[in-house]
Image 1 (cartoon, rainbow, N blue to C red):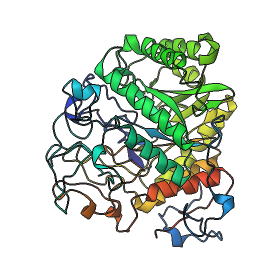
Image 2: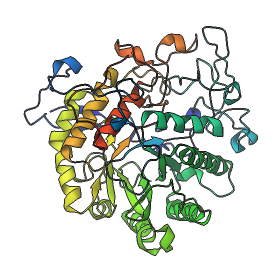
Image 3: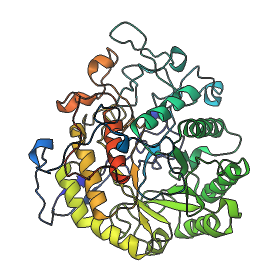
Length: 487
């Protein structure tokens, strides 16, 4: 029996110090939460799959490598569409977009309230001894106006500046990367704890949402909102979501041609109900679903993704054991179990598919629901929680990520949640990050892409996600092993 550490949580231990929304000490805020708090059993491997962790050249697939987007070998038949079809969830790979990074001097409502630095450090200018993120973003393409100065320097002596999601140019750049690599789009994380009307956090989040909408519209990507209930006042969860969703509908956001729809309804995610370390009751969840799915105005009635515990089907481990949750989970139009940290290498990912995911897919489909597993590249939070191991779940050059995609696709998943586009706090980001320590500040400790001994370009995980998207579009065959190689 293999015990797998649950490490999916950003603010479960150090809330305010980590620059997180002010929540209770046991109420993390982040869509990746779950806390560094327990272990769950991924099963004994079952099946007949190889228990090893093979590299690309260790499995004979008989299939040629997929071309990388932009490579000379990419023919017209595999070019990504200029505009992603925003009318369906089927076969979509959507990445969570936190959009929570802010900095002093960015001019945002947080900055004006004297709380400029968010998520890079705990409310103070980032320095080696206070940074709360793990991977240094590749900022070489950003203009000087997009960077806020820190207390660190790069090798060439230049200030090691960081960006703010309040800056529309930076968010637009992120969407240009998505288009360049053929990605579908994102699920914008909206933290209910920050949605109090009239508050600076709400104004900041609304500005980031505007940036995301503009980026998606400018670059032909799609997007939708996902509400995270972690840390929100229990009595206000439903009211805050309904108010915010109604405001989006009234402002015409849901009618945007780039806002994701399915079966004619706008898509929305609700993450966090039913976890055994979070507030919220089955009755509250049912009341919210009643409104979203049937009682809201016709133009606001939603197709709902449910971000649920990994053991939603058995009501064990990270799920509440209250039997009423079983029916709630099956009310969601899409069941999306949170899997970050539920396995830690290729072998345990394959074992999880055998022992858990196959039955999960069958149960979701039996209930008439779609299944949307979470795929993550690796995990590390040694800066956020000092003293924890660096590179806790190694990425292995994308082999770990691709194994998860292969197993989920083979198991019959309908759509896929990528954790995450910009989550450098926990080391799950797939956007451009430092290739080597030479691209990081000269002081401080950060996790670079070559940590596992393989030289990779900063956009490597965007390329890998593009390869997976081509598989989902029927433009390439699904391969067992990582289908692209570094340049």
